[in-house]
Amino acid sequence: MTDVMVSAEGVHKRFGHNEVLKGITLTVNRGQVMCLLGPSGSGKSTFLRCINHLEKINSGRLSVDGELVGYREANGKLYELHERDVARKRQEIGMVFQSFNLFPHMTALQNVTLAPIQVLGRRRDETEQRARELLDRVGLSDKYNAHPVSLSGGQQQRVAIARALAMDPKLMLFDEPTSALDPELVGEVLDVMRDLARSGMTMVVVTHEIGFAREVADTVVFMDGGVVVEAGPPAEVLGAPKHERTRAFLAKVL
Amino acid sequence: MADQSQLTPVASERPQDIRAVPVRRPGRWIAAFIVLACSASFVRFLIADSAMQWHVIGQYLFDSQVLNAVVRVFYLTVLSMLIGVILGVILAVMRLSPNPILKAASWLYIFFFRGTPLLVQIVFWYNISALFPAPHHLIDIGIPFGPALIHPNANVIITVFVAALAGLSFNEGAYMAEIVRAGIISVPEGQTEAAASLGMGRMQIMRRIVLPQAMRVILPPTGNELISMLKNTSLASVIGYAEIVYVTSDISAVNYKVIQLLIVGSIWYLALTSVAYVGQYFLERRVGQGFSRAQQITIKDRWLSLGRGRGGTLGR
Ligand SMILES: Nc1ncnc2c1ncn2[C@@H]1O[C@H](COP(=O)(O)OP(=O)(O)OP(=O)(O)O)[C@@H](O)[C@H]1O
Ligand SMILES: [Mg+2]
Image (cartoon, rainbow over all chains, first blue to last red):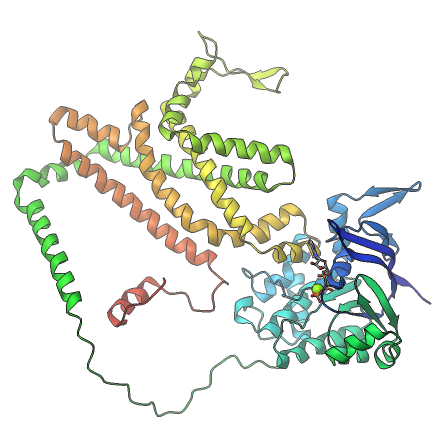
């Protein structure tokens, strides 16, 4: 059974005259982990942001769980989705940012419960119970009431992951979740992500952690200059890259 | 991965504090002496010279007319500020919206209300009934270009109080709009994106994420605005609103104790300002939550540190 979660066909994205994505075609199957690698400026973040419509694509087709991102198709015509419907689709896609982006005026627990209560209209007591479980799961059982400033980067990122998981997403997007962390804190975040992958979550991860990609990814995609240079199982792309650009990049990051 | 958050007590023996002869600073002594001498002679002038007539000030300080005026100033300030802040938020959001009409409308509003004297605006609102046809000065309120639903009499609605309130709050809205806008754009875009990625709508993001964080930037200048507002209520005296300046100059017009009554008024303005200070202090502490690792400094700590700090500290 190959059940497709994310499907991109010839996705283009321009910022003014700067064409950042030049026809990205790839698929992510349900329950699988895809790692995106590539040099700075190759369009990895931009592609990730297109998936939950933080950026609008200029051409091509991009769909999540069988539904187009940002549009509705009827009678061969595309209709732009209302803001409300875009928001509804984003509820099902969790996103974790390089800079954490926790809400600084709220405690860890409030960060996690905010969206389920405000967006899904869930009951507070149940949501808080669930949030505590999630924080326990990411190893923060003693930090429920801490504000983000008083947490380390690794702890903040783990709260951010718990916050995204609280919405019960069917897809998780990670944009260099460990790049802003001190080396000794990287492991604790990768551990959480590894657990998540094992639990069957569909994940698209932009990362420079080759070891993580090798171990966890089902597919590794190497991007450069807005195109997919090479894609395949980690053993192929990382172990025996076919393209010169991939080899050069791997030589630099390893 | 249990995180050790408590500090474990370090070695029990503390090293000796340094004992050194402090640097002599004669300049400080001279400056302090000059300031003290000047203050002392000024205080002597105030107390000794019977010309001040302190008993007159004491007599009018709690005069019932004056007290009524103080209460009016308090209400006018609070209400105008409240309306001003609400208007400011609406105008700021309009100004930042992608809709060009809303943007332009907000810009024009700010342009007019900041660009004309407050005094003129207050007098304008007071006389607005002249714009509605005599003799009844009816205002048609209803659907624009459509039928009017109610026809209140402008002269009846626009009392001195309403004119003062309109003048002060509409003007304040323009200033608050700029303050709120600065606060909103001070919140990093990542916050909005994180909230959007959780499926929150624009209004929810504004209300739950952006505005609470913007408050930190908005509050200090708003405290300034509140204090200006307090004093600007005195402009309402020109349209005959019985606030502090109007009442005290009314009294001094009869008894010629001009200076004494100005001081009576000033004492009340200072008292009201002090209330604003205290309010601002506690509000700032509240919205500052989560923005600093340092424990919140209390007033008491600050005064204690005054006695301790040797070389003086930089910054806040
Ligand atoms: N909002 C924007 N407006 C204009 N240009 C943008 C915008 N966002 C990204 N770009 C440009 O798009 C290109 C790709 O950016 P992107 O952030 O996707 O790269 P990346 O692969 O994630 O790089 P990095 O590894 O440094 O994060 C860059 O040249 C960047 O300048
Ligand atoms: Mg990036």
